[in-house]
View 1 (cartoon, rainbow, N blue to C red):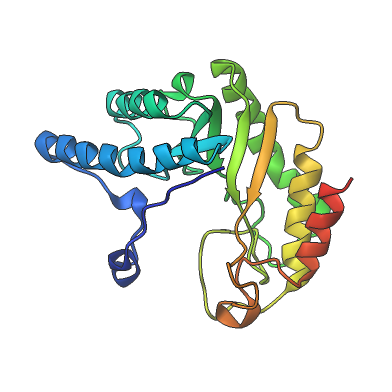
View 2 (cartoon, rainbow, N blue to C red; view 1 turned 180 degrees about the horizontal axis):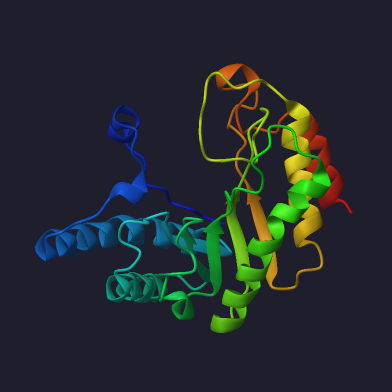
Amino acid sequence: MFKPQIWSRDFDADGKWAGDIKFDDENKLHAWFESYHEYILHYAKLAEKTNTEIFVVGHEFAGISDKTDYWREVIKRVREVYSGKITYTAHHSDYNKIEFWDDVDYIGLSAYFTISDKKNPIVEELKEGWTLYIDELEKISKEFDKPIIFNEVGYRSVSGTANDPWKWDDNEEKNEKAQADAYDAMFQSIKNKDFIHGIYIWKYHTDPENEDRDGRDFQPYGKLAEEMIDEWFNE
């Protein structure tokens, strides 16, 4: 999978993300998408050149994911230069609101669901937290007759990692078992679900020795979670 992702140092400074991109002015919205075409087609051509199997046409644009006609045009232009499978990464809060899933090959999302409100839940409790989401995902897969991919899923190695997996809190206690348990519950919940075709782990650094927040980051490298992931991928 090739997943171009817009990220800006301005986001870091203001605590924002790609989902904050939105426009009240139609002219500005149109101009943004024209610029985005140039950006995404550059990478689509590179994906074609490198025989990439799956290409992501957009990632977590929650503020403009309802601009269906614009996204259909993005997908159309990408298909003109790229022959592989196409997906879009929906934010976990809006995947069930997107109307252009019929134009892609996979329904994609960042699966950072809140599956527990406890600091140290057991695996069975975490699995229970997945139940509602699995049912919703199966429903949308059937509605559009499309398989689902978790274009991103990840947990930090801290207590309470399953509460709000996307959030950072530098005061959280390091807890490798919590991270491993969260992965275990996820794998148990999605196994034998034929409508889920794959997952991509967030994240491994290019330099695996590079860690954020004293080993409390998402990276599974060298942690209990890595052993759990390895066990499931080799099942």
